[in-house]
Length: 494
Ligand SMILES: [Zn+2]
Image 1 (cartoon, rainbow, N blue to C red):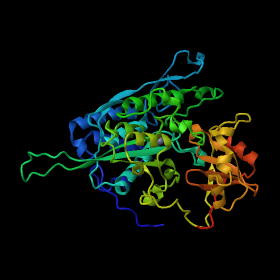
Image 2 (image 1 turned 90 degrees about the horizontal axis):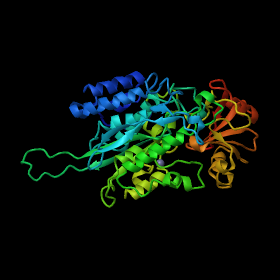
Image 3 (image 1 turned 120 degrees about the horizontal axis):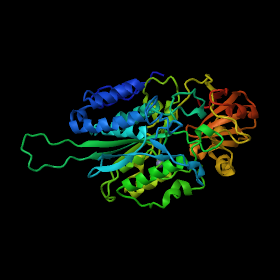
Image 4 (image 1 turned 45 degrees about the horizontal axis):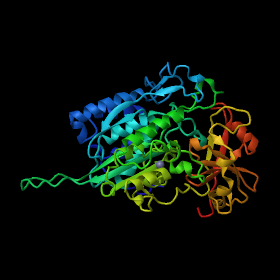
């Protein structure tokens, strides 16, 4: 499909930055970051010595956490590999709720859209990359969602996938990336138009200062495999994920200029108290965490009304051969804010629709490339056998399955199955809430087994093997050993 694409804005001193940067590999990215620090790339900001100094500091920390050999990432005295700086806790296994590591972090100041700069804590390459790129802003006033901020988020997400982590294997992608943990689930950018102050003493003829759009990029929490099952001895880290979530929660709490929750609300965010969802995310887990710290001002009545934002779900990178930025393909993965972020947006006095997915920015769901093509994916699902438990990362608990909600007469699962002509759909296993809760396996009256991608609403049929027990056995194979083939099903309207 050689469709005409959106004309993209210049960025960071480069006319074709977004389209070129979208395809950067790890060494291209390192080179570009180095060139920014040297003042050779990055546009106007890197001409300033104080900015280059700040970027140099961020870069050193960022590189220490990156693949393949960042010294903090591969730290031999704190195995397994993790993209968080950490130290092993003495006698940690003796604790009631064991946590293997103490999280280390750095304090770095940034101003963003705030009245004055603020010091926050940083401990992750995805967040540090967001800070690095955001420090090269602001964007010009001609930058908008389609020509600037969406491609910016898409490039940021692609770079995150190059510097750390690995592909989200549950979608049947071949193993991509040699980092720790799935890539972040979501990427977000928040921006704000800042009016230049009126200078009454400006002599006639001198050009007035220009308005600009200040922005901040962030990703949802990721960067570790978070293995909570003691049977995986070398990889077991106890409740380390929760400890890191707690730190991010604290940093969000302390950073926000305007907050209406308390330090006691770690387990009572709107998402957590909603029994209808299969998600269990505290405040601070979202991609909005740092963007909101550096965008939300203290005065709800006026300062935050013009905040804008978009969130991009990582599956726009699902195609392994992805080479070109395409507006329609990427914007199909735009997402609205979760209940936690909707609460923060409303607390800030910002406008909810400025963060929602509008028709103007997003065309319809990604359409199949050809009506007759059966997209066959070979999965090398990565996990180890653990008795009768569901495969690692999946859940079959009654609470997570929430059968009535998803598979009742008007449930989303029932609807998605009907779109491809399936009846009698019955879900039996869902991606666990800690892993995003974004896919559901089900059977139908055909007797076959299917996968519902809950983000895109696509349905896949397992074609080799086809038997439920055999499929689960493949999913429980050790890393890289399992083989699964499935095809994308198409609805009658395509
Ligand atoms: Zn959120």
